[in-house]
Image (cartoon, rainbow, N blue to C red; front, side, top):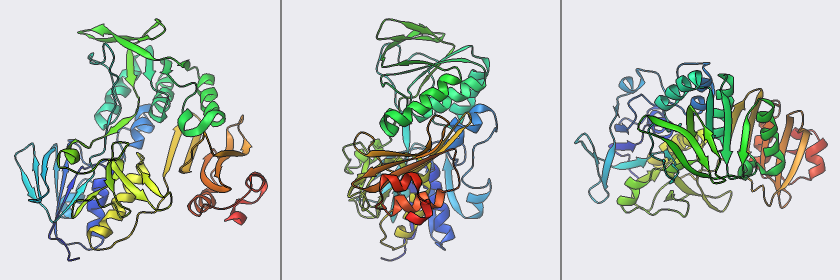
Length: 407
């Protein structure tokens, strides 16, 4: 494979910006075009729902320094959205009238917040949290709010609930599930997070759906539940997940996976010649799991951005990393590695759930499928090795043995 003369990257989030930077780090001297809808330079998303939302910082973690793109001769176009791809002509059109020919194309278009198709779902003032501007506006609203209602008890919803409580607001979280983070963590571990928020004054309306939002031209004023109850609110945040931005890829004729991502092989290549997909949209075949995997976490965006750079330059390496993410809520910090199914995998707890000082493991067929350390920070390397190596261990070994001895 000859070195491409021009690489176009659509999407200037962490995945796309990391790919552009890594290409230069690896000595690529050809033309790089980086198109980003956001008007800010590329930044990382985790601080938006953590330190920035709580007021501990006023800026996100920028992917690169302010002058990086100019210094590295990367043609970064902020506030520009790609509107159409002509695969045969190898051409990307944007909404500023630009046309960008490519030898290789990387799609890193990320995700958008999901909305609720209920009456009042388009009322002004309904908030979502995905961008830097979203986070700054939501933080300001939290500071002035007396009552906050958050629809969604996933990671964004629970982190936002912690931030709103830090600002002194009364917080109610609504979700159809019976416990926060249930689908990811299962009953026992999700109960730790439920108790944590309850102890910090969060009100739960779990097992209940949203029938609609109330308000008028001046904005949303509350949430109406399917039970008929209405929750008054100064601020309403909808945090019911994210949908991959695949309209551009779909219109170009690229194959989509069952979960709505862009199908890619183990090396992050789509079926179209010289077109790659990374980050939130990439449903790539993962050799470790023997199936397509699509992950919407910071680490996946960063690591796939780094990995795809080598394949753009002629390597043919599969992407093998296991998923990883972290969360900070009140005095609880945690890291999760791997990919578990809490409904079928065996849960093994090392430590004390009630004290929120433990590591949880999920075993599948006697092998470590995932591990999550909560307020324990000494075993990160061992946990990574156990997950990456799908270590064959017993539950008793995980509870009592020195973890490094099991690697």
